[in-house]
Image (cartoon, rainbow over all chains, first blue to last red; front, side, top):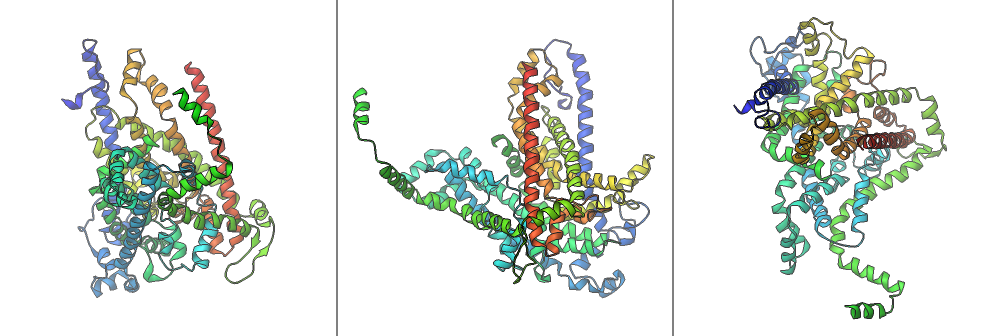
Length: 314
Length: 320
């Protein structure tokens, strides 16, 4: 019954039956459209997963397959995780596959993203709290400066930034360029300020201040526990952004052992541009995406609401 | 009361000197607050402002990096890029074409889907919302990998579908216009989810009573949409247009791996030019290109603001 509910509330009495038949058709069309869209949005994920389970030859048949004809195979995963038997390595024709340390790349990427999340969430919450709940000279001016930097395109100082980081500071082949320059970000400060000013009542802060708590204690003992949800949203947005970073990584990281998973996949794709090893590329992509998918589904509700609320308050 | 005011005005005006001192005392009192917000300003000075200033000096020099001296060349880098660079003009045209494609279609698509998701008593709203947002977790690199198989002219899904419904297969990544459309499709798939969520958030913030009042006044759904929804979404639209423009100008990983700028440089982007200058150790020209891109974004944003303002005022007059 509920699925037949009209698009807009039918006015009692007035041509009720005709209106509800018309809008029932509208409902069905609406659901059909939404489902088709959902399939379009999901299909690339499906083709990635199913492609990773097929032998390479199947991916170059005259048309793609919805299901591996000989059943799913884990060869590509085994090759990447270096647990393939010598025979399988032989058969794949990739004798040098063991030069790649895929688990290490995943670990590196997680390490970069994890530390970045810790730093950014902490410093942005600190600043977000200060802008949300404190009053001090030049507060609004300073906040406007932070907001204005959001409009500054990264392209403007990208070359000198790269040179500063890579040669002046000598941070080539280190992870510091992903941690230090984005210690605190305009976006993060803005977001935490919005979250804090809309969820934490002034009274809590005031009473803690009267009790003689220091500002640092207030942030770490009172604000952060209450703001855990908001910090999670910022943390996930940061994690995904850093985890998927490619441009800067491509310039900074050249040592094989320090590679991130994105860098590995990109290099692997570029090296096999004529006949891409899609089975391996897909298996790598699936393994690279799984951690993000887990995080996504665990915090799905909070994340969606966090992104949605950004617009209203912005 | 009156007495109090009188006596207050009787106090001699503080000398400018002591007003400064008072401000400084006030600031000192709030030193912890400044400490808390300082990380952003410190890293912004070191990694934002300083490189920009130094980059301007660099953009007026020829410098291959390392220990070699910087050679002053005046505006030659800018002149060279703007007049004789073989790829920059193409990159500019491509970026503008893609921008012209993506902004209207992307925003319209996201808005329509958001409106559909905002229908009252919709079952499974949360599920649809999550599915559309799912591409958010994918990286530019991975999306490019998936789409290069997806759009492959011989083995890809899209051409299979076209063949099934009796259409000619399209050489997606081989011909110039289809390649540009491919990049656009990829970006739509990747970015629509976020836009849908932002629109949906904004839609849900609109008071339902406005629609009910309009309905009582005899407005139909289309009228309500253009007279209530769209005007109230203007700030969000503006925000999204500006961020989408900046984002598109930074487009790199997806095109590098999907088309590598080809065919015949028809998907070569501005940021790709910059990365190629860096790869060629042409840092002076790279820095100059940064400022050129900055100027382009400034001009585009200005035009967008003007157009939107005109559109708003025309709309406003029509409503009156």
